[in-house]
Image (tube, rainbow over all chains, first blue to last red; front, top):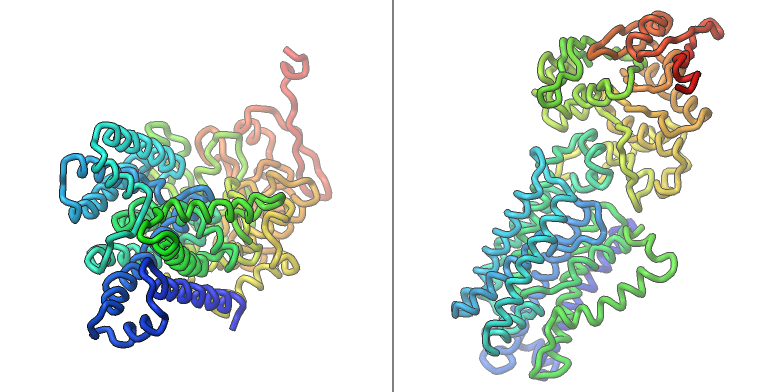
Length: 333
Length: 261
């Protein structure tokens, strides 16, 4: 086995351990043998079964889905824009979804309709950003960043305005969404969103060989045979579908999409195919552990997932990368 | 590669027209001409990156516009002078990128053929010992050789190079030019835009002189570097000298410049 395959295998093992942790730990204390029994007999009755199969397993699956989606989206955008500071929310998906959900809450739209509303608004915003970033048949990286940042700022101020005008209850609902959380999410939400995330992953797999060439700039990419415009639209489409799926499942979970691709490149090097797989594994593991901590630390109170990941993750990242001579590792060799 | 009656325009403005130019296997063809005449644009159009307003570009006997991106990359490639410095990639990874057109998107494992092509290319440009080094650590001359290795790994029959010696000192420039001539002798067609007329004179088999919106001549160095022709292209007078049986040229500073007026 090559060293890269060994590293991917190690990351896969870590991800499995992280997901298992999410099934074994939670707000209510279950003995490990109860959890194992419930896992082995999914159709049996009892509290343990209900907790494991209706609460923990779907949440772990959702955490994995969110982690994979955000990490892969961040990886694709960082590579396509050749900018290590890009995160998946750059395309305006989260800000557009946030504004739509804030307005939806203010208008009294029922809670189950908010995630699809956020998903649609996120896609709509990304389309608008893409239209502004278009140049010729392809996408201009600088225009994409400028359009994404500007529209995100505009929509964030919508959210602020709604928060100022709305009563306490509405504000709580909006804030819970803005700080990112998997509380109350279950199989239904996962089944509704998974097809879009899966479509995003398929697009990512098709586009990732071009991404390898795009790392050398559009001029060389074109020379070696990449249809640059097609690759850019595929990558942006994949990143948008993945981000919108994650956002509609979990609200805004920052940090994952920015940091995980860096960690992945550090572990397996910068080859796009390997780094994509590593990003997905690390993302799934990280969000699963984060969500487990968020519901286990102070039950029954859940710490918002986005907040918790930022508290733990940002200092770790700063330590890893901003030590003297650390900046050169941003691209991870 | 064969350009036939090519006209290039940017918006309404015609940059070049009536360009008939052939790149022959085994030959190093230099393109020279004043700044802004459209040398880079011509290369980009020849590589199929830019649309042409009239005429045709054939590669391997086929109109370049009818080829898919990957088919085209097996026939012709262009190393521009606007290449960006990739970060965190080894020289070998960069050269392997040249194999893009030879692989399907689902072909995730780098095969022996790709590795062999990349290693052979690195050896051809004398960079084998740098294969594992990070590209960032290479000198300008080594970087230029690494880009050439990428083009060789790509295995295109025609190589277009935009000012391959522009950032190089005298020694590195000579190294690259000799290498280009050797690569041409291997059987490839090599076309390089060069700024230094004497580099073109010393190394090219033929020189294409662009000026006044068209191709003024495409012929052997001794004929292409004829003073009247160069004056027409560049707008300054030239003196020519014989060096080791070849022609060298020196631009004559206009009187106004000498007097400082």
